[in-house]
Image (cartoon, rainbow, N blue to C red):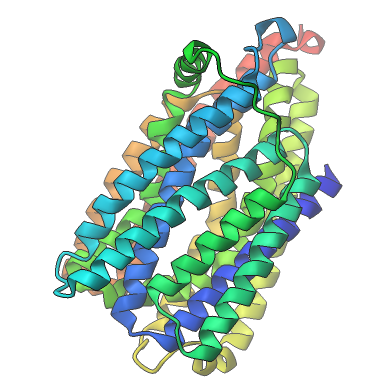
Length: 420
């Protein structure tokens, strides 16, 4: 597990450094409102990849870990075919998203360029992210790391050329990321050779079975994304895209911590699923304790260093019109400190296939968050939007760890022969 965790962590470090570099370049090189547009478009791309992983990633993981006689035929091949159809659908929804976010634009030609580039970007990035997820689920973690290394390297080269030539814009950034995603997907070895499709029936049957397995995971993933990102869209409506840009710019400072959690999740969800299937409570408890320590180890050190060096970093990283960064960073620090508890609890419930529980819990959290966002923005100012996020997370953590996880854990205790 250690080697896979290190590989996944390095994988996420590459993404973190790339995302930070793009954000830094855009913050310095384009107006704050235009950066706010980039934030919203990139977050919508994240929503699409999250939905893909919830529907196909979770179902593939669960079906692939079942006994051979219960595993669908050509599971990986048919899963890849379904992913192609989903990426095409994502492109269509991307057109609607761009039309809505640019509804006030008067330049029809520029708007058309954004639509064309963004839809191509969605197709390519969704396929790259799905292939990377499958690499981890089939324990090809070296190939997953190679994919992201190629993607990050190409992106840095293309974006550096754009920076030095003065051509940096929302459109050019999405062109660079789309081309880099396509190259990373094509250059790396294929997951499996797709057999000639004589009948679409087996693919449709797998799509139906995947839905039966993940029917609560998919809406749950949308809710999870909404909890993490919907406030930025609401904030854009209430206070303008400039407020969205400022809140997201300061959030970037704690993103490395979030990416270490994602790195743990990439290598752990198959392990958790197997532990639940085995039904051994001692192994399960040991795994949870070890995961808790791994997830929390970097948090206090990182936050301490960040708060010490930020006064020197701020003039370099942000323009002068980003005026609320210090207060926002303090609030983001509180949020980062409680996030591992929420992340670990969510991962455990996924391992128990408690998707219905996660959906209901996420729905409650989202309702509390949205109400808090409107309250704090209307009666205070946009910087207090993070307080609403913290309160919603705390509520979710308490219910998750004191109500639902004990119930799920009792399933293991019943199955464990050592306890009978």
